[in-house]
Image 1 (tube, rainbow, N blue to C red):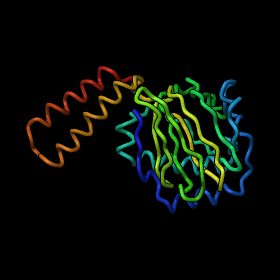
Image 2 (image 1 turned 60 degrees about the vertical axis):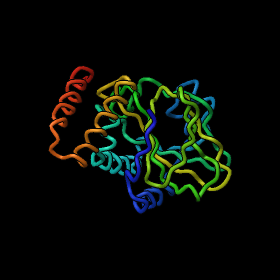
Image 3 (image 1 turned 180 degrees about the vertical axis):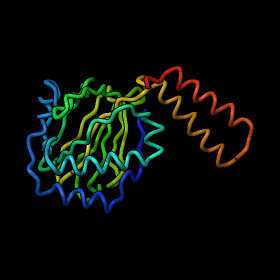
Length: 226
């Protein structure tokens, strides 16, 4: 399931984040890539241990905690601390699949990457190229979102970032270990949860809501790794 989540942060917050990290020390983006991905990755990245990455990453994690849509779609068990990258001057990231297990160097914690996330920090009109292309069984999806918007997609998806030919594309990226590792099961739970939300809004007090909510939680009980 590929899902766009609007306004995880505001456009003003995105601008402040960009300003905070613009003068930071950037390094070769291949530092967090496996062998295969490193061969096709041409971008810059903030070091994980940098003060800027820790500070802004913490604010992004706080914003995610306030997003019911993110929780419903991801059912997060663990979230890898957000990283930050920058593409400019023709930089790109060729086709690759994200590694299954991510190790957080400062803590040694291991996170299974069920979902990948990209939070856009630059407005789409401020750069050319830089589209995220995600392939799944339904074809190739082109993603280029407003500053502050985020896209979630299965980490097992083949994906790439096209060359940036004007301006700079700045974003945050990270991975989520879900309580429900199977993408199909997560998608079913998400659709059921959204149906419950709509029914609660349009038909509050309907007796069917109790049954639907019970089905949701019983499926979650069956599939979740708490």
